[in-house]
Each structure stands twice: as C-alpha cells, then as structure tokens.
Length: 345
Ligand SMILES: [Zn+2]
Image (cartoon, rainbow, N blue to C red; front, side, top):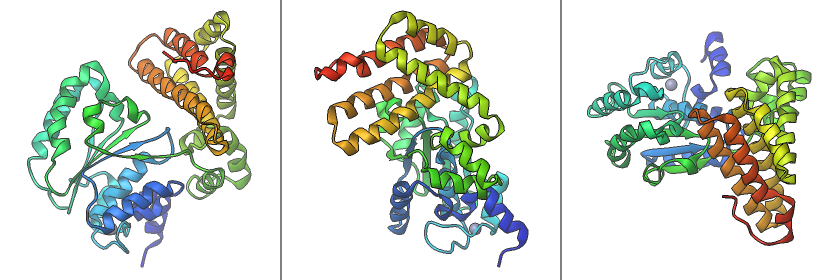
C-alpha cells in the first residue's frame, strides 16, 4: 500500500518503478528485462541515443530494479523500500555517479577504482553511471579512460557500468567493445504528450503544441513549453544550415556557420535538432528501401555528432560548423542523388 507522498514520488521520479517506469523505449526495456529474468544483466551497458529521451532515467531504473528490496516483479522496483528511498534522495551507497568534469576526471576515476575494490555496501549490486561517457574521448581524459578499461572488462560480480552517450560510435573502440550497446530512439508524439501531461503537469493543449517542435525529446519539450520562441528560432537555423549545405554554396555555409557558432550551447542544440531531423529522414529512407540514401543520411548524422563533440571540447564553433556544412554537402548535396557514392570526409 502506497501513501499519497509515495504516489507523488513515483510520478516525479518514474525510475522508482524500475523498468515499468520507462516508456517509449520498448526494445531497450525488453533487452534489459530479458537479461534480468535470466539473472545475467550485462556488466557494462552503453546507452546510446539523442538527448532527452530517457537514457539517464533508464540507468536509474535499472539501478532501482537491481537493488529494490521488494520488487513487484523481476526488472521492476517497489518505489518505497529503504533502497528505493535512498536512490530517490541520491544517497544509495551502491549507486555511484561519476563526476565527468574533465578537470578532475583522472582523480575521480582513481577514487572509483579504489571503491570498486570492495563489494557493495548494502545493495545486491553496484551500479556506476558514467554520463556523459563522451567525455572519455577527450585527449586529456585518455589516461582516465585507459585506467578504466580493465575494470570495465572484468568487474566484480554484481557490478554494472552504464555509459550514457549521444554518440556511441565516437567512443574509443576499446571502451565500446566492452559494453553491450542499447540504442535509444526519439520518443513518439503520443508518448511524449502523455509524459508532458502526467509527469510535467502541462495541460493537454500546451503539451500537443510543444510536441511538434521538440522532435521526440522530453527535455526539449519542457524547455519549449517555457520558451517556444527560442526553439522555433533554432529549428529555423537548423533548416537554414541544412539548406545551405544541400546547395553547397560556400558563402551561404560560412554565413550560417558564423551565425549559429556565436554561442556554443546554442550551436550544440541547433545541431541536435538537425540530427533529429535527419533521423526522421533516415527512418523514411529505411521504410522506402532506399539503401543508398539511408547510408548517406547515416553518414551525415555521424558527422553531426562528431561536430557536437568538437564544439563541446572548445574547438572553434564557427569553423567546426563550416566544416560540417561541407561534409553534409558531400553526403547530402544535390549531386549525390545522381547515384555515385562520395565520401563525406
Ligand atoms: Zn523498492
């Protein structure tokens, strides 16, 4: 029997229900449920997918499912036992969240490795959340990444790493090969609308109006509800960059790059919208059986992710976007549709 405050917690923190609280990621949930039912959850997962679709929430849900003291069924959590309460308050000693600030990352990884020499303090499992794992690919994080490799390959039984990334293919091969990669997808409009109404207390009318702009991301939908003009402007910038890239005119690409690149966070967000737009195209090409177009679109999406990483690492944003514009032209430009394959490099 749940109290009113416990019910409120479940709405505010859906991970407290374990995998039952995760919506819109059916294939990921299915893989995790099967692994738990078989008693063999993987020792290292790579949760890979766009921003704001539930990767970190699913990591917490898995931690809850692994440590809940009275789970209703395998893979779920009760939401009100002592372990669930500690996960909600962020005080569970066996759920470790790595601080991914580059400045102290090497020391942070050393502390983690020392901690992992001991078994779980009070839970059945230790869960280590590495978010964003993309930080491990920074040149200054190479030592930390290498220190992590052996433990990532063979952790103590009951220890599970969850690496969260928007660009799993950009991680070091040595890290990727040690993880089971699960792909998260943009949330369907209906799922997103329901989440906005149930978890974010938006009216159904407001929820529907922001869903179209937010392209499957709950995080973006919430921000959009607070500031729809900003998102609309960024959508237009993403469209303009794509249009300039398709024509291949250098002056247009340069102009868009200098406009978008003036603010680093804004640039990353515009590129995220562009990635999501191409994700929709990729799905349509796949359904239509257009293999070549699908390959070119996938290549364009890959270079967008690389550019986002470069911008986050303080490479010049305008120059990075200008280079991206040329790469997108190689992958998606009009002459590509004549049939010959071109490299996007
Ligand atoms: Zn519980």
